[in-house]
Image (tube, rainbow, N blue to C red):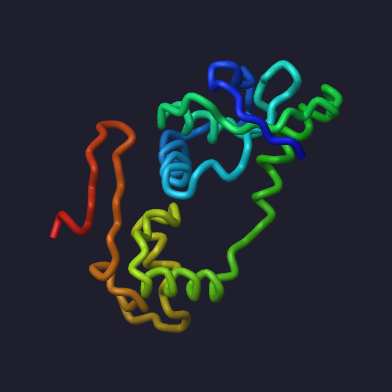
Length: 167
């Protein structure tokens, strides 16, 4: 697979992309790119139209990036391009979390004092994921929500919430 850098203005969204992109998804992907770098290229056709990676593209725009990594899928037929656009978004729906392994990974990150917002989980999701199975005591979890920092920026008004600063 050949990955090349392209000026962002040369990459064009697919006008009738059937997958809706929420502002929250753009914010989460932008945070991921900012923290970890651009690790997955945007896949485009020979004309520069996005096949997959619309959310990454929107996140790159939000971050003000001038160039983005792309893979030009010039060996796909127009039928394959249309099918791939849908398949790429649909296939992730068939995966599920292994709750025990997820809890272990999140617990390990917490012990390392990692900013848990970088996992893209919100506070409620973290508390649920870190809950000890079989422990049905109201509010009982393996994690104290005050022990990790949670940051969130409202996509509508821009207010930034930082649990560490709100105490």
